[in-house]
Amino acid sequence: MPSPLSASVPVDLRVEPVDDILDEVEHTLQTRLDRQTLVRKRRSIGARTDRRTWVRIERRRFEKIGGQGWNGTECAALLEGVAKPQWHRGAAWRQPGDSVMWRADETDLLPGAPIGNSALATEPSLPDTWWQAFNTSLDALAVQSTRRVATPDTVMITQSGISGAVHRFLPDGVDVTVERWMPAHADLNWANMTGPEFCLFDWEDWGMAPQGLDAASLWGNSLAVPTLAERVRHERRHDLESRDGKLMTLFVCAKILAPDAHPEDPRLEPARIMAAQITKDLQER
Image (cartoon, rainbow, N blue to C red):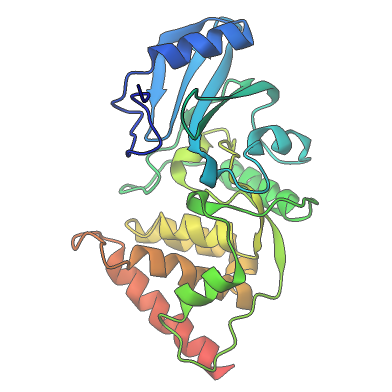
C-alpha cells in the first residue's frame, strides 16, 4: 500500500502525520526530539533535541534533488565569515516503495527567534549592529567558492529561466545575459534570519547565482513596508545597482506579479513601479 506521504500526491507537512518520521530521526541520530517545540512547514519540520541542538527534517521528491544533491546545510558548514548555525551531523534515507527521500540535519540552536514570516507586513526592530552583521555575512558569502548551483524555490536557476522571466518586461533585442555569478543563499527572507542577533539559516538551496539574487529577494519580501524595502536597497546598493542586480530585481518582480498573485497583495504596486523603472534603465544602456 502506498505511503500516506506519497510523492504522487501533494503533501503539506503542516497537516500530515509525522510521528513515524520523528521516530526514525531519533533512532538514526541517537537523540530525543522535544515534540513540544515542533515547528511544521509545508515541506520541512524541526524540533529541539535533548542535546540542546536543533534538527531540521525535509522531504523531497527524487526529481527535486537534482545533480548537486540536497546536502546544502552540510556543505554550508565550510563557509567562512558567515553567521550561521554550526552543523553537527546529518542523515538521509529513502521512503520505502516511493520516489521520496528524507533528510535530517542537526545544528546548533539559533541565537534568537526568526524575525517574522518570509514577507513582512510591519517594520522589524533591528539595531544597526544587525545590519552590519547582515552585510558582513553576505559579502563573505559572495567570495566563497562552490560548484553548487542555487535552487530558489527548489528550482535550479539558469540563464534560460532568467531570460524567460525578465523578458516579460523587456522587449526582444535587449541583452539579458548574466555577467557575474557568485554564491548566494537563494532563499533570503525574513523567516530565515534571526534578530536582534543576526544569523542566517536554512541553507538547503544555496549555490552559484547571479549577483544580486539575495538582495533582490529580500527587497521583494519587504515591499509591504516601504521604509524596510528602501533600507534593504540602501544596504545592498552595490548589488542592486549593478546590471545583474537589476536583472535579478526584474526576476523577483516577475514572481510577485505572477498571474495567480493575490489582487490585494501590497507588494504588487511597488513591484510594478520598480519593474517599469528598471526596464527603462536597461533599455537606455
